Image 1 (cartoon, rainbow, N blue to C red):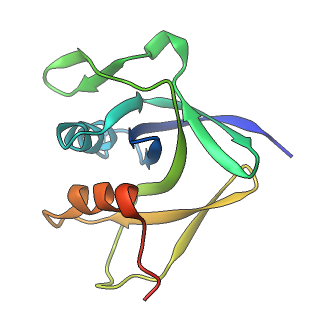
Image 2: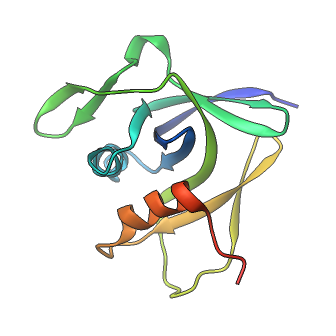
Length: 141
């Protein structure tokens, strides 16, 4: 079984808990990462994210060549506060639109682990809700 991989994704973290943001080129990965960074998250990686499994948890980090930088379309490459490594708490898939008000629990399988999976929402609370999930997780109710 694979113990590491590199994903075409962006990743930001709040207090050591990270979200991997996946999607096709131009789907808004960096834009969502920048929004979460504006709310206080730190950049882990933009465009390519290295992941590895350790003690049953997935960790994300940045390839050295792109450490501490993020692309902002129409502005260029920006420097960013960053963290070297963070435990992945969830995955956002920007290629799928959420249609349910209270969606079922979905999982994203990665390196033998199942991570909570969130589909894209165009609602104005999408980024704040992701941040809240990083801060406190999901209710079991």
